[in-house]
Amino acid sequence: MRTLVFVDLDDTLFQSRHKCPTDDDLHPVASLRDGSVHSFMTAKQRALWRLLDADATLIPTTARDLDSLRRVDLPFQSWRILDYGGVILNPDGHPDAPWMQRMTQVSQETIGELNALLDLVETFIQSAGLSAHVRIIEDFGLPFYLVAKYRDDREDDLSRLQDELVRPWLAERADAYRLHRNGNNLAVLPRALGKEHAVRYLIEHLGRENSELLTIGVGDSLIDGAFMAECDYAITPRGSQLFEATLQQML
Ligand SMILES: [Mg+2]
Image (tube, rainbow, N blue to C red):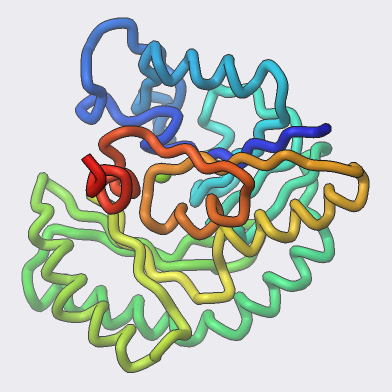
């Protein structure tokens, strides 16, 4: 039986230094564009990696684009899911063509509204004097989703943007878009973009080549719950956003 592990990266396999529970035995694993080391694995995260990597195919399932995935120093050797599922790379490192076609259509259908939202957010940041920045994440020539982050430790600024502008905007568009917020990361995604869509596609695709698959989903954020639910088993780090909303309630 072939085992597939769909694994989120940030805050699941590693995190920035200030989020690490201890300074002991940290292993540098991801860097910023300027080359400075930004994220680290703890000893337990490395042990989890070794455990999963020993007998399974690890498939990163991440919001990162190709450029930022390349700055992660982990030896992924098979399929890769990027951009919240916007791009699926095959084991040779090329975008899966049928998936690219499907996501090109999604991107074309939503870029007008995402650009309009970008303008609204930029105007709001300026007029309200917020310390935040916003951009649309593009990869392989396709715009996929909008992301805003706060600066200078002003987390409340991002919450204000979320409550006063983004939530009302989403409410007007019913179910066409969704919000992801976890710490310094506010993302607005079209519904048709999602890790769960890409995971389901790959399970179906690889299921045709293998008589039986065992699938495991690993993630930390509420938004990861949907792709983890596509898998036979689900793993979440203790203390994660997803843990707090689920298992923590049972303690
Ligand atoms: Mg994460």
